[in-house]
Every structure is written in C-alpha cells, then in structure tokens.
Amino acid sequence: MRRPILLLLSSFVLAGAAGQSIAPALLAPDARYKADVLLIVAHPDDDVLVGGYLARLTLDQHKRIAVIYCTNGDGGGNVVGNEAGAALGQMRMLEARRALSGLGIENVWFLTGHDTPGQNVLRSLDHWNHGLALDEVVRLVRITRPEVILTWLPDHVVGENHEDHQASGVLATEAFDAAGDPTWFPEQVSPSRDRLGMSNLTEGLLPWQPKKLYYFSDAFENFSPYWHSTAELSPFRKNMLDGAGPSYSTTDPSPSRHISYAHLEAVQQVAYQTQEAETGEKALKSGNLSDFEYPVRLIFGKSVVGGSPTGDVFEGVTDRPAGFVRVRGYEPQPQAEITFEIGDPWRFYSLFWKAHNLDHLASLIPVPEVSAQPGDQLSIALLACNRQQQAANISVTAALPAGWADKTGFTAYPMRAGECYPILAQIQVAAQVRAGWQQLSWTAAAGTNPVGTVTLRVYVGESGGLPQ
Ligand SMILES: [Zn+2]
View 1 (spheres, helix red, strand yellow):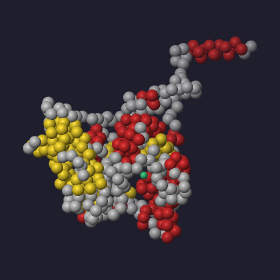
View 2 (view 1 turned 90 degrees about the vertical axis):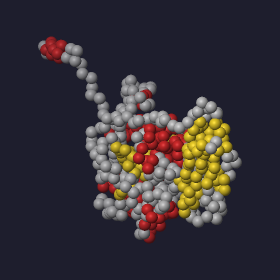
View 3 (view 1 turned 90 degrees about the horizontal axis):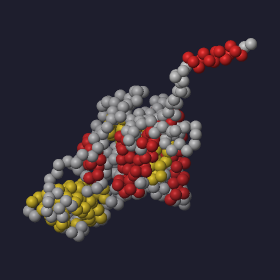
C-alpha cells in the first residue's frame, strides 16, 4: 500500500524541479597550497639571505610561505663529498627541504633550470629555456595564489650578482604580471573537461593577480650596502637599499621560539651541508650570531593594492582577491637617427623595467656597474644603431684610468641603413690597482658629430666578482 504514495511523492519532486536540476557546487581551489608569500629564487640556500624574515612571517605571524627554486643548484661545489653535477643537485634539493622544514615550510618546488655561473641574466634565461620556465612559474603562482611575491632583484649590481639570481627575479616579475591574464598560458586556466576522468588536457586553474612584489639583493661583501655607509660608497652612488623598501631586524627574539631570528637563520644555514653550513655551525657553537644579524632589507617592486614603498609588506593586503592589472608592455620610444648606448644585459633591463611598470628600479643604480679583480679582462657590450636611410660609420674612443688597457681591437664600425652594430669592448684592468671604484667611458662619433657617451663604474675588489 505504501508504494503508490512514494511514487506520487517522487513524481511531485521531479515536477517541481523541472528545468531547475541543480548541478553540484564547484570545488574551491585547493587550500593546502595557498600562500601568503611566494618566494622565487634560483638556488637551494638562496632562502637563507631572507631567512630571518621568513621565520618572522611563518613562526610568529602565521603566514603561509611557498618556495620555488628555479634550479637544483647542480653547478656548484661540494664541501662535504665528491658528488657533483646532477648528483649534487639531487642532494641540494633535500638540503633545501630540510632547511625550510625547520620553518614549517613544506610547499617547495624545483624547476628544471640548471645552475649557470656568470653574471649575464640573459644567459641563464636562455639556458633555462625562458618560455618553459615562465610557464612553470605562472602555473605555480596560479596554484599558490600568493598575496606577495618575494624574489631576487632583476638588476646588474656589484655584489655576488649571480645571473641565475637575476633570472629568477625576471621570471617572478613576468609571472606577477601574467598569472592574472587568461591569455597567458590559457591551457592552464581552461576548465578540465571531467575532473574525475582521465586525460584532462587542460588544467582547471584560475587566473590570479598577486598583490605586491618585493625584491632583495646580495650586493654585499666588501662593497656591502648592508655594512657600508653612504660615505664609504661615495662618490659614486648612495646605498641602493636606503629608502627602497621595508627593513626587518633579525636580532629581535621570536616570541614563539624564544631565540632571535638570526639564530633561526643560522639553523637554516646548517641544513646546507654541501655549501656554507660551517658559518651556521660556528655561529651556533660560539653563540656569536653576527654573520646572521644583518637586517633583511627589501626593495619595493610594485603593488596593486596601494601602501607605501617602505611600509610593511602586508600593508594594504586583505583577503579580497585583486583584479587583473595590466602593465604597459614594450613601447618603442622615438630615438635619434644614430645612437650609442650600453648593450645587454643593461639595455635589456632598461626595456624590461619600463615594460613591467617598474621605472623606479632604474634609479637604484643610475650608472651601470661591474666588479673586477686587478688584471681581469672585462667584456662590456655596447650598441650603436643607424636609423638613417643611408650607411654610417661610427668611431668609438675609450677613456680609461691610468694603467688600464683597451684590448677591443677595433675603433670604427660600419653600419648599413637600419642596422645596429653590437660592439664588444675588451678592457684590461691594471695589474696593480687599489681596491675601490673606478670609472671608464666610451665616446662615439659619426664623422665629426658626437653621437653619445657610455659610462661604466668598476669596483675593483680583493675578492668577489665572477668573470663577465
Ligand atoms: Zn644562489
């Protein structure tokens, strides 16, 4: 007797829902991977330089941190074993995971770039397959949905100035601007056809616009902007970090751990046994943490949510997602018919900063600079362009400090109409020269008409400085 009633009921329900069969609610993006800060660096151990700040964020402000290493550090040396190359890379990935696990950071990814020693960012980008690496970084930005991206400064600075560091900063900047744009790597943001099925060939992510971008730099050693005052760097430039962004002390004690952030950074360093663990071990053994007590000084990149450049990193950041903000992109500028300028990587950066609305980075180091050792041979790229309708010749003259030698081999360069001539200046640094800054310049002329002058500052040190 009950069956007819049930049938009647179900008929009623179906009739009531006719045309309104409601699909299940969508799933939210996987919360396990959400990050407040995404750190994008080049090598295992790059995290240590900002480790004191990472510790403050994760242990005491309860921020979620994710990390991308663009390489596994396979190009470095090994202070504890014979393993090198790919084998060393495998070990360094585990060292990085151990270093970060001490801070409770588990979401760690390694891209497929190889460690490329040198100082020309464009070499690293080429070596890493720039497009492939950017695809991977944008994917991870869309997975981690960071409020803030923290990365190496994309600039050529006197300091360690590793080209891989700079390249990670270039990729991070490009990803900051691309991840919210659905036309960049559209396969990543196309819905999966059936998430429970197989062979989904699109990824089902959502576009994501990070809110703030900050940089840091390893411009230290003898010419350290961390240790040296403006007066010591003069007359050539101010400390580029002064007023450039917020600064975080590492001598403060962690309220949750009851030791200083510098102490936590030393512990982080000890995980890198194949690299410079000894510095951390010595500091922990002696209790002298001075090697880790430098403040973490950041350089403001940009924000889509306001806030002042020197304010706290999270100033202006709320839970509400930011809408996509388009950057300017490359815009050709009107130029003289014949021009003479410094070449790559400096020329690339001058275009890159403008294209990504980072014009202010050009003022951090207003005059290009490199480091060198006494007796080094520097190779500096220059570029002459002829936009005239007819051919032109330019002559280039170098003005060098006493005892330095011009080994370039040519002094005049022919250009057909519309051509740019890439010139590679070769300069021999004097064998006997005091440590400090020197300045050199090249002046170009077309016939008797001056075309332009390029100035370069060279820090001649007793150590540091990879070959150009
Ligand atoms: Zn590094």
